[in-house]
Amino acid sequence: MVHLDSLAPLLVLLIFFWKKPSLAGGMRFVLLFLIVQTLLNGLCSWLEYKRLSNYLVYSVNSLVSFGLVVALFREALPTVRQWVWVLMSLGYVLIFSAASFAGEGFVSFNSIQAATANFAITGLCLYYFYYHFVAEPARLSVTETPLFWCVIGLFTYYTGSFLISIFYKSLIENNAGSIALLWKFHNVLLLVACLYIAYGIIWKQAPKPPS
Image 1 (cartoon, rainbow, N blue to C red):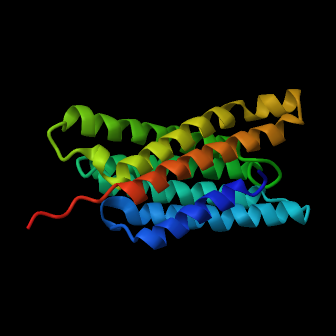
Image 2 (cartoon, rainbow, N blue to C red):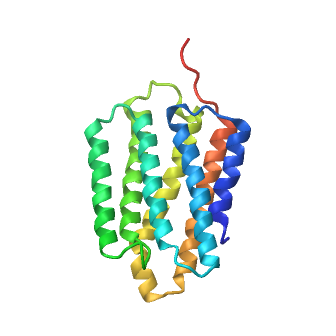
Image 3 (cartoon, rainbow, N blue to C red):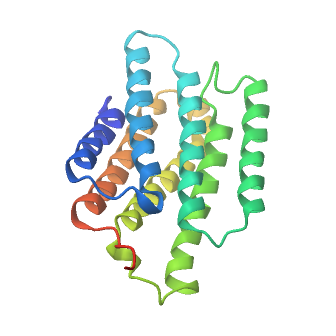
């Protein structure tokens, strides 16, 4: 299970290139998210194999992935005001900078940065569901689009990861051996997310633009 966090997104990438789904409506950011997970998680596994620190790479992964997912929702939720995206991004960058200045992400896992990103993206996923099922229920059946299943995957991954990040420090302080168990749980969450994304790509079709 050590390499599951890079093999799972790699498999979905191959499916992506096989099925060639439309990149409209935020799907291009799903593609970039998969590429980032494959490359950076693979690099983390290699650094761990070489017994080198990989905390900085995980921080970069969190930062880049946050930007990609926010860009996805910015395109998928056009009714959200521009200032909301600016404030969210600025708040995340400030928290990331403060945590990094305190040494988080260099000598230890940056759980503060991770918790912030996980919480924000979970909120975006919930608003996406609210928008399509409550605010605009008359729109095209969103469950028949690949992006919906990608969002379910992101929701599963980031909600579960949020629980890991908020309890991370207390768990490892009481039991250092729990780190391996936490990362196995994290990798399973990413696998489940990738399965949802793969389902959306294989069995769902992007809506065709009106003629």
